[in-house]
Image 1 (cartoon, rainbow, N blue to C red):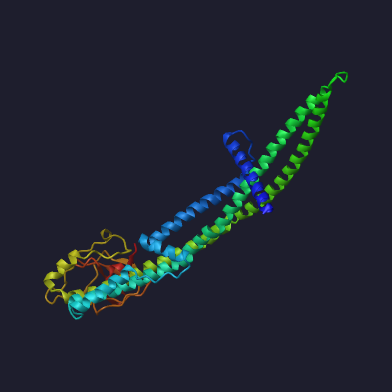
Image 2 (tube, rainbow, N blue to C red):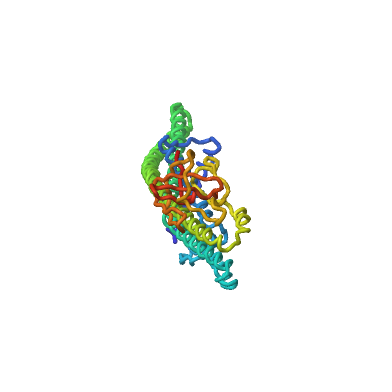
Length: 400
């Protein structure tokens, strides 16, 4: 018990000394040991690495999970070290609702059939989104979170220790400075030797005792300063090594960023392919579902598909009109290319022809394309040797 009391009193004394030194530094009444420029740069880089890592982590969490309640729930599960329950994505839930609605409307009805097709695509989109969230959480968010909860906490702890060591060092410097000033003053007072004929030569004795006392105090302060300097230098080296490790952290985060970008690109490519497939299914069945008198109105309200090809203004495309009004069909084999206006195009994705009027495509091949008056703006005539047929614009990259 006595030991604990003494330790508590010692700790209180050290804390009080540091508080006094810190206050005097803020008031400008005490000198402060400055760190070298390289060390200060390391501290600055560590600070903005921590700040930006926090912001990127939080915003990525918002991107992957926009629902704040769900984020709080996942945070609590992580803190309680429990497995996060599997969550159905919005796309999967929408697809489930569409499928159930189709069963009630009648899966054989036109509306029911379309609901089933769109619902299945929404489920696939939801599964792709869930895979993207899972991959990003493991390969991107986890390393960022490990840095903040692991490496950065160690760096912060060592920086606090270094700050205390510096305060102790500066307090020892101030104590030594005061002891030397008092010793010099006592020595000056002792130089004026008293007259030994006086009846009371006590002042000389007191002055000599004070000079010896301050000399001992100076020796003690110098010893404490050497110890404090050694501890400060050792702690500064430990902190410097940790701060230089930030470079390795940047390299690790760079690799994680590449993996996140690749996962995101894969996710959006899957979504695009799913929607292209759905568009083909809906496009092939649209003429069977709607009477010909309503096809024009249906096309007017359907938004154009997302395309990586140049704007429509770069190629003259007109509204769909059948070249053979008598039977309402178009035979690409009987279509002759215009004298001018043909262009080369590179195929972006594989395309399987739906009927004999379309041309099957393979990715990365080059074909000749052109438009005819009255064609649907979503289609072109493509030629490959002796083969000819309609091709979708969304599968092409028009070249000069």
